[in-house]
Image (cartoon, rainbow, N blue to C red; front, side, top):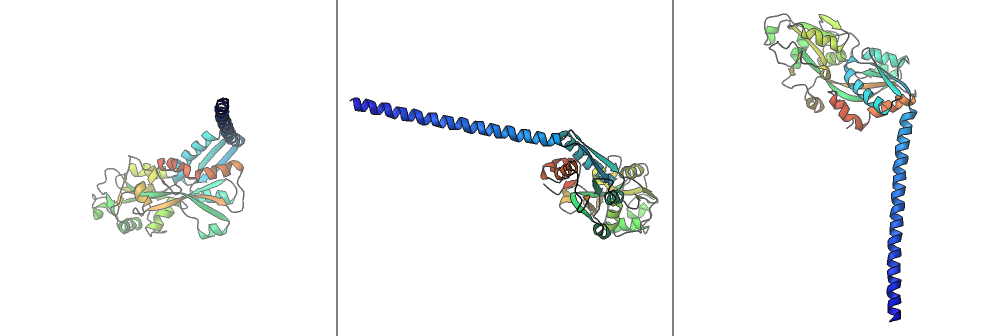
Length: 295
């Protein structure tokens, strides 16, 4: 009888010991996990706090909205860093990188061979449609690529010849060196052959001018299109994020980040570059009206 009681007591003691051991292990694991989480948070905070200074960007006026949104988000997470943007046009932004006047250049076109040979490299940030825009009162709603080319070179000069009212077509474009102009002329096969009535220095100026002239036609970044103008369908396809992404809207170009090969960026500029080329910013890029390539 005594042996049975002793055996029962011994078994009970072993069970209690086992549960106590499990509890201690769980507490230890929980404590370690909490410590790891705290350490990770402190490391992230320390990294953000350690970044300070200015990141300078320069170039494409079409990229103003997307680079502004990305810069704002980065600054919120890195309070010691300021991201600046100088809207000078694609070619000017590329030249600024070559001359060391900015950290990251912004171009709404691919680099030319001679620019690559000078030691520059590009990273695609997003894809953007080039909208063909007219005054809202213009009855024309669709043009094919060939007709757009003929209008641009002056072969077609009156809106009545393409289904519109009787009126002289007024072509509004961008200045030489603009990435938007380069993209438009390359796609429509009108390089250096366009008969512009006005050559303006920003996307906003093109939109404002077209909105004030019932006979005007121009081109602008899809992300910048407003209700004050009307975007035409091209070959029956409307410009949108979806049609740019699937390639059915053919008037499109890349948004490029330009850097100098072999030149190390500052810590804050590198952190900004890594952030805006990561998949985590896809939603921000999409909300700016362009199509992210990393998602």
